[in-house]
Image (tube, rainbow, N blue to C red; front, side, top):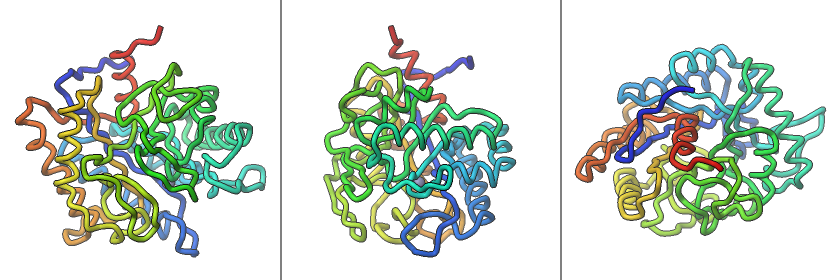
Length: 316
Ligand SMILES: [Zn+2]
C-alpha cells in the first residue's frame, strides 16, 4: 500500500468530477453535448488544477467508462483517481430502466443496479472501482450497507443539508466531515467500514433555496450551476471557501477536507466563462485561507483520502 505523508496540519483538497453520459435532448439531464466535448472538459480540468499541483478524482458513469476507457486510463497513469458514478435513472440493466435515482429504489434494486454498473465499469476499464458517488447525491438508509456488501471501501455519497426530494436526496443535519458510515441512519457516523467523505458545503452562509430548481441546500464550490454554466452563479466562491475554512478551523474534525464537485460539461478555460472564473478563485484563494492558521492545503485524490482516514481511525 502506498505510504501517505499527510499530517494533522494538512487540509486535503479533493477536486472531483462527475463524468456524465452525453446529455439527452430534453434539457433536464446534465451531461456534455458530445463525448468529444466531455473528453475536452476532462483534460481542461486536469490541466487547470494541475497548474496548482492538484490531482483530480473522476467519478465516471459506466457508459463513459466504455466510451472513454483510454482517456481515463491515461488520466490514471498521470496520477488521477478513477471511480464509479451512477444515476440509476440514466442507466438500464438487461434492457430495463430504473424509475428513480438511487435513493428511491428498494434494497434489492440498489444492489442490482450498483453491481451491474460496477461490472460494466470493471469490464471497460480493466480494474474494479473501490469508491462511489451517486447521481444527485441520492441515497436512502439502505445505501451504505449495499455499497459495503458490494465491496466498496468508501465514497462521496452525501451533500450535507441538501433536501431535493424529487431526486430522493435528503441530507438535513448530516455529519459534514469524513466518517465511517452508519448502516441504519445515513446522516450519522456508524460502525460500517465504508468511509464517507462528504461534499464540502458552506453552512455559515445558511440554507438557501436554489433559484431555478427550488431545492433547499447550503451552497458548495461547484463552478457554475447545477445544470448549466450560469444558473445559481451569483455565489462568491472566495466567501464560500472562507466560510468552509472557518468551519474546519473551529470544528477541528479528525481529518480536514475540502471536497469540490464539477461536471464534464463546463468550460474551465475561457477566461470570461463563469465556471473558469469560479475554479480560478478557489485555486487562487486556498493558500491565503489556510496559511494564517498554519494549515496546508494539499492535493489528495478520494482513494488517498479514504486510506488516510483509515490510518487515523483504525477499524477494530
Ligand atoms: Zn451525476
